[in-house]
Length: 146
Image 1 (cartoon, rainbow, N blue to C red):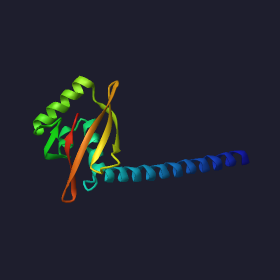
Image 2 (image 1 turned 180 degrees about the vertical axis):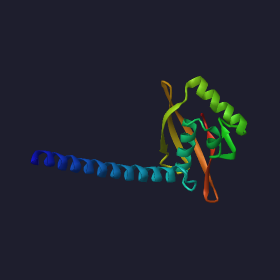
Image 3 (image 1 turned 90 degrees about the horizontal axis):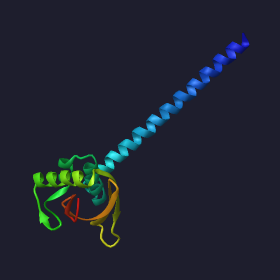
Image 4 (image 1 turned 45 degrees about the vertical axis):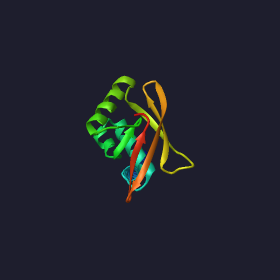
């Protein structure tokens, strides 16, 4: 009888430990999600706008990516509208593969300029990005590739 009650007690203790670990993991994951969403949705920091832009491109949400662009943004020196941007982004995905991952590096000399390392399919390349601040919002004003 004591062996059965000892086994039941250990099973109960083990179950409680597993529940506590699961609850802690859920709290941590929820907090990380809140912090990441806050970072990606900030418009008052150029690095957040750049990250949001590339996260939208990675998710093939080109309309969301377009919202990070200034009305007079240029791609390789050429102006474009939203429909043209969506077409160009779709073509880039079709020709080079969808964006798998990216890394963003702020240029030390200018807080409004970034280099983005992009990986599409088996190819990686660098895109140069410039932003400008309009009021309390940052917008991308030029890119040299998608």
